Length: 115
Length: 113
Image 1: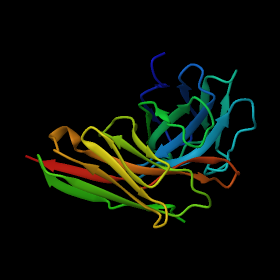
Image 2: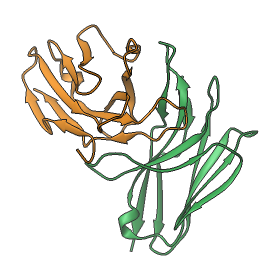
Image 3: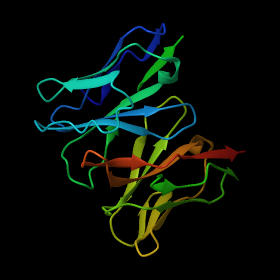
Image 4: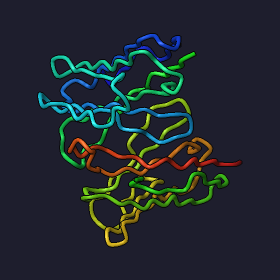
């Protein structure tokens, strides 16, 4: 596709339910990042995938959060037993390589509301 | 702790010039980037500075001083559509060892007619 695609764009879920958020990066991009943005706040790093290397999961806030990336392309972020504090916009970004000066291309995000 | 510091809000009038400052503290430095984010939108890349000095792209310029761990984004001939949040970002080392784009809390720019 032309850009990073995320789905769903909005998700309302009940506290305690599990949710899955999907990210389709730009074709050929080897680096993929997940960030979380709370209202009026900056971008909080969650997890980083680079090619076939083991992901850097050091930003995940709890063991209720997990993510995978299949075939080096599509990624899914899963939040189990959602809590109200999980409400935020979840942003995915991809980069064409892992070079340190590489621009990151962001999707529109998934707005998650836990009620 | 927070790697980057930038003002939370800046206001200006149409046609004016505004400067958004950013100071950073990282374990290794690999350049300073700026991103723009409109309400409800995706952050979009504006500029990148790896070396000291001023980089100009149309109405937007970005400056870096590595010795001062400081940079700024300069917006000229402000337009209403420039109202947005602006984030500075550096590559910083996550606790897992990877160097990932790390963002400041963002500066909300409000442009008045």
